[in-house]
Length: 520
Image 1 (spheres, helix red, strand yellow):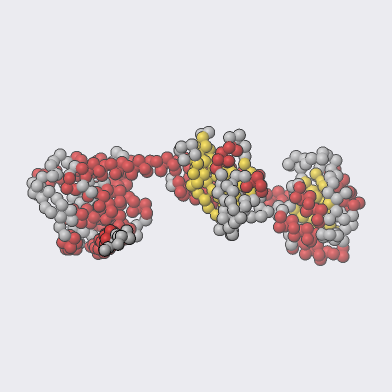
Image 2 (image 1 turned 180 degrees about the vertical axis):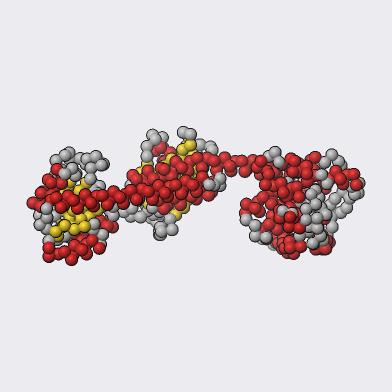
């Protein structure tokens, strides 16, 4: 009967390395002859009487090659070929036909069939054609594995190249979307308190959905992995790992999850979801996702440590800046304002985000060397020449303070050289023009402007117009002339925006409701 096994071996599928053949023909004698002979040649064989029965069998078992007649009732070879190409494209197809339908057989090859065999045939010819087809399939599989290996190598390189957690997670998500052909990728990370939070939720550009997507139930995933089992489920079982939605919620068709582990510690989970009907993840895709997760775990750990280091870095800078400002009650807030002005100028000049952040941090730390100046910074009146010479040492002291701290080294040019002048008459090195690092030239504007517009022990704050006129007057001497106009524009825009916000806040305070009381 169609669909019954005729192999001389066991009823169950044999070892993975034994090729699996499905013989499809409406003539029982031909099915049985081919099945007997192919079994003796070492193949695992089943049969089906037409295309419809063959599709049922293909849904039950995995096959390497289908040997099908062209002319059959219910569903012929061409229709079967189209269905195989659509649903199981990895299966090699060989068509059998009589002399009168050779042109149709050639048409079948154009549609994806590997080869055709003319009836009446010699069984040796059939075996030879099947072996060539399986060899081709093997080469295609090897090419696919090589492409996957190359892709994984590129992913590994991209992951290892970054210390940014966002970049690492973006690379992981892109790899999962592309390599596993997922509709959605979700990364759940340990929140440090025994729970999980959703750090990444990316959708494939190919995926178009109508309706809401359900949220992943992280607690259900954690419970599953308590038994250290791989998670790959479909249909109703997959839906059990999502929160219940309403009628407009899209139902997941397939879910595969792999754990992100580092030194026997769970960092989180990498989840791939399919919402496309009929698209289910196979075991190979689960293993591929697992490999991506293994490559990613160390990078995630390093990136999280780097984030912690950056947080410590920022706290250190804020603490030092606060200590500097507390040395002089007249300059309280000076470091923060200089950092804000310098950041605005760096943005206006089109610097990259990392460069802007370094400028801001360097500006925040620009006076750190004052810690080494043993003198009274609060004295009324101008400094004596001796005191001024001591004061001029603070950029060098700042450099000395920061140099032993490796992660603060990028800030040194701004801290050390912000008192250099464009005409070369500045200190501590007497650098000139474009030789002065851009960071230092930027901070010079911000520092000078805030110093002039703030109260000092020896004078009151100067008006904004006086400060900007002085900066314009000293353009080309003290300041970089190419940056002077840029700074003038940004400071005017900054003051205007600040005034507008203040006016809006004042207007809100004035517009108080009377509470509906009658005024009689």
